[in-house]
Structures are given as structure tokens and as C-alpha cells.
Amino acid sequence: MDNPDSSSGANQSNEALFKRAGEVIPGGVNSPVRAFRSVGGTPYFVARASGAHVWDVEGNRYIDYVQSYGASILGHAHPVVVDAVQRAAAEGTTYGAPTEREVALAEALCERVAGCEMVRLVSSGTEAGMSVIRTARGFTGRSRVIKFAGCYHGHSDGLLAGGGTGMATLGLPDSAGVPASMVAETVVAPYNVVPEVGGDVACVIVEPVAANMGLVPAAPGFLEGLRAACDAAGALLVFDEVITGFRVGPGGASGLFGVRPDLWMFGKVIGGGLPLAAFGGRREVMEVLAPLGRVYQAGTLSGNPLATAAGLAVLSQLDDRAYAALTTTATALADGLRSAFDSLGVPVTVPQVGPLVGLFFGPDPVTNYDQARASCGTGEYAALFNRLLAHGVAFAPGPYEALFPSLAHTAEDIAATLSATLAAVTAP
Image (cartoon, rainbow, N blue to C red; front, top):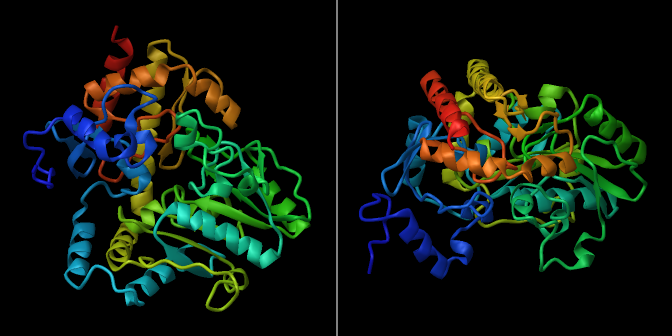
């Protein structure tokens, strides 16, 4: 039998591993966008990672802008995080009982986000999404939910309608296996347009910066309009900050834009690269959760001691200087990409929100999902992706994702990325 530890990459190839994976994993991957369906070719299998780079099993090194889709804000294998996880693992990996670290992480989240008074830790963004909707419904006694086309809030049945990210990459407007009854109470509205919020609406859920249909910033007044519409209807406003939380600033998007929702979803950064997410909000809303209230939610691995150790380690590194450095790096990348494409006469837009960067082909700014699909549907991203990969630069293998420069990306990495972009775009 083959050695199950393939981390060394010895005698392995990406093609052979992908074929082997296809025998035991549907599509050969554990998350659909990893299959490279929208960009073509064979996925690279990561053997190890450090800082801004990943190495595949064939020994190829890539400057990595995936960074686990934003989870690795410090870069891969940061020594502070590695040390915290190793020390935690030596004390046991899971208990099924409360720990001090999960209290400390909850305190840290609430301290950083104004208006978030209580949180419940879970293991994934999907879990946070399904739980925050149940909480909103339990608090309001209403059933209808409004979401926005192109926003992705995890793969729970009721939130898959009009999803972005991998759903859009695969061309799936919804999913087989989801009964119509599960989405009957979900209303999908266009992003950046304030919808009518009726008295039957439990909540409006939104990405305050849409980062699952490329990168689409909220238009001026959009978030403020949602807040006012929810207040008028007695509905709750939910910010999905799985991506923006603790990335765009110490208080996330709500702190950056000055609009306070009733409930939040967090993920990625707060787990330090381990499976951890959270949902939280006003005390009176969160107290509907069991064991205080009648809304049931549970998880055996919630508040996992390794994940909370990693999350606390990451948050300890994110001060004002770190956010300034992240934004400086992202700005250099965004400005450089604009200049590179402009010098070659290729029309693109490169949106940026703090440390987040996007890329759309076409001359006009993208403000909603229909426009994002039109840009992504040109097929130009796939060609760029594969040419960049051949030059040692890894963007996400799908056009609906953002770019995630980390604190580990150096000026040299950015310069190499821009050189690779010029070479990729001019390649025959």
C-alpha cells in the first residue's frame, strides 16, 4: 500500500494524485472549485506551504494568492500560529467540554466588533450561515429571508439560491437535492439595490463587501439603506463577514463602513487556518439560543482547542501596523495589475477594498452579479490563470474569487507577480 503521508511529494505527480483521488472522492476534490473545471488542466496538489508560497508534490513553487481563500492572513505556517497549535495539541485535540481558550476567543471577537455582544463558535462558515438564519427566525418569529444574487453564505439548502463562488464557477444557479420547499422562503434580490422589506421578513443577509462574485464593493448608501429598511420592517440585518471579518480592519466591514448589523457571521481569519467560524450579535438576539432559549444549535467540535489556539494567535498579530502593511501590499498589487494590463491595451477593472483585490475583464466597473457573470463569462480569466501558473503565480482556479495578499507577501513577490502577468498576457 502507498504511504498515506504524501506530504513529502516523493514519487508523486499532480496528474497521478488527481486520478487516484477521483476513485475515492467525487470529482477528485473535497470542494468543487478545486477541480479546475472552469480553468482547465489538472489541479496542483500542495505538499507544503510557507509564508506567501506553496509547493506542489512535483516540487513547483507558487506565489500564492489563494491563501486558503483568505484564512491565512499572516501567510502559511506562521511560527506564532504553528507554536500555538503544537502546544495546544500536546494537551489534547478535543474534549467535548468547555475550555478557557474558547471563552478568550469569544471575548476577543466581541471586544473588536462594536455591537457584537455574544458569539457562538462553530466549525465552518456554512454552519454559521445556517445557524444565524435559524437564530433570526427564532427571534423574530418570521420565516422569510432576503439574500442577494452572487453572495454566498455557505451551502445550507435555504441559502444556495443565487449563490456565487463555486456555484457560479460551475454554472449552477441552485443545487440538485434541494427541495423547492427549502428555498420557498428565500428571496433573491440584486446586489447594491435596497429591496422592499416586508413585515414577514426575518432577516436580510448580505456580504458587506461581496467577495464571492469576484470583488464587488457596496455602493454608497447601500448598507445604510439596508439598515433603514430592516429597522422600518422590524427585520434583522445580518452581515456575512466570513471573508471581511478581521481582514479589512480590526472591526471588520461594520467597523470600516460604520453600519452596524444585528447579527454577524465570521470565519477564515478567526480560525488561523483551522476549521472554525462563529456567529454573533446583540445579546437579546443571541439569548434565544439553547440552553437559554428555544433555538437549538450544537456541535461536537465547536470551540475546538486547536482552532481556538490558532485563532487567538492570529488575532494577537493583527494590530494597526499589520492592517496598514496589508493595505500597502494590496494597493501595490492592484495598482500594478492595472498598469500591466493598461500597458498592453487589455481592458480590465481591478477593484480594491483595503487588503482585498479583485480582477474583472472589461472596461466598466462591476456592481452586481449579472455584470460579474458577463465579465467572467468571457473565458479570459482561464487563459490568464493557466499562464500565470506556468510562471509560478497561483490565483484562485475560478474567476469569481478575490485575491488575498497576506502579511507574508513581500515587495519582491508583488514585483514577480507583475512580471509574470506581463509575460502571461503577451504569451501567444
